Length: 464
Image 1 (cartoon, one colour):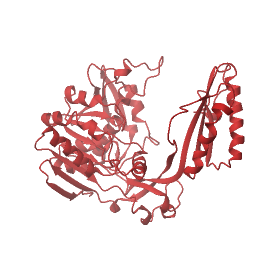
Image 2 (cartoon, helix red, strand yellow):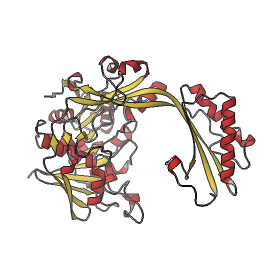
Image 3 (tube, one colour):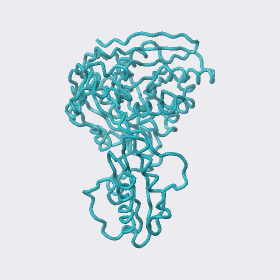
Image 4 (tube, helix red, strand yellow):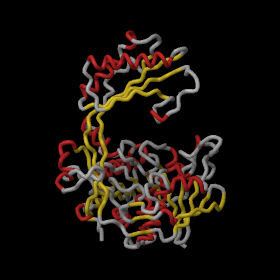
């Protein structure tokens, strides 16, 4: 019986580096999968490009992630699937081929799945924002980024063309797992139960070690051994079984509870989990512990036909933000922090600070739950006052630091300033994220395959 093993190398762009090499060395995997996205990834990349044109249009960690593993993956026949292409997956392909040439790797094919970037035309598509119902065209001057969540078809086509490495732009996170499964088992994309099976497997692994103990530990309630060395997960799939485990000899835990938590992570309606290739019913999923750190996954007819639209994420320029921190310690720390808040409020009036939003919170007391936080049981020995400001212009945002820095000599007794001497502006652009639904026929995906000898092949990705 055919058996495919997929290793989860990363759960987001700035995840750990060493697990990829360990999976290649010890995981006996057929595919190494990298999820390098979050909701803000593409918009943040666009902002970085606007501020510095030398910024790579792909994941800046692409090279340090690929360099240690590329040769060994090729030698072992391990395929790499990654969404590190971000704004320009073909440029990412060129970078991987550059690494391969430097390492003397022969006969390497690298594919780019393109077509989801629509920032230049989303305002002309007659679409509305899902959140407000207002036309996207009304905000055309504020559009920073717009990209569609593509499905797994491009990955399958790339593998059919013999790609050793597949690099995508924005795809649904789970698609980096659905793609190789659909290819290896020759699944029909019209079979929504099989599509749901692959998407659910991908959803379970897409956040990396969250299913093997990461982001799970709660001392005394949910203890995780050796969290400092948590092992990345591996899924082994056959025609009739799905088993999740982790790298042997590593820390962490794979249990029914870790699987259940990950199953409903970032899910609104478990019975209708919308994906590009299918709607998945997560209520049809169950788990069984079959050995230490091994859980079998059962998925029973969990698919519904896909929607006629794809989700697009639109980033809008919404001004600028900055933050400062002021520290107090010792007797009367809270009273001095309260006095500082009053001083700053008066100073902001004098300089006519025009704020879209201004927050003054005490870290460790009310910075997360704010008004619903319980009052401190006793007078705190130390207090950190955090100030966060959102404005329409960079010049207006700069006013915060110009009023906070003088507190070092004009403020309450014992005022401590966070990084008083650090140079440069800490003002950064704010990109608001909104969504829209785009008819599938308006998003033709394309595939570009390049090899180490310099050949380039381009084709369309079928959607029917």
